[in-house]
Image 1 (cartoon, rainbow, N blue to C red):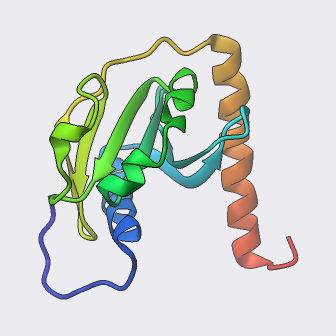
Image 2 (tube, rainbow, N blue to C red; image 1 turned 60 degrees about the horizontal axis):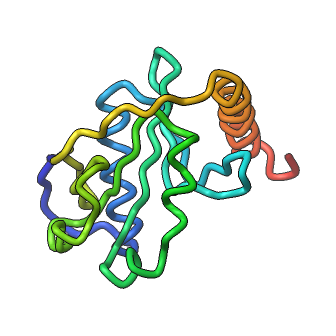
Length: 148
């Protein structure tokens, strides 16, 4: 985990997300924030590796946030690996032990528990890969032209 001095602006969830994105990038993944799956659910971070494997990361900024959200199990068929990402103060023993765990802050992140691999359906993978590429391209185009 990277350690730097000085605060960065943002909420606790923003800080965790920033650290997760840095970790995914360092590991060679291409991350997208707020990615919508074909089941209409939106994941906090989706990342794609060079081999076409998907990682979904659900950011939880507090125990109340975790308790209020039971939809995370609906993400599992849409990824090869699933992680919860939390800040260092989060009570980690409250999270399920059969999924991956990342601890993050605004400067970096570390995988504390690797995720088990899920078997993702091939047709779903193809559809999601295209959706991922189009979403990324559209977001990039929108940065240069707000009318896009």
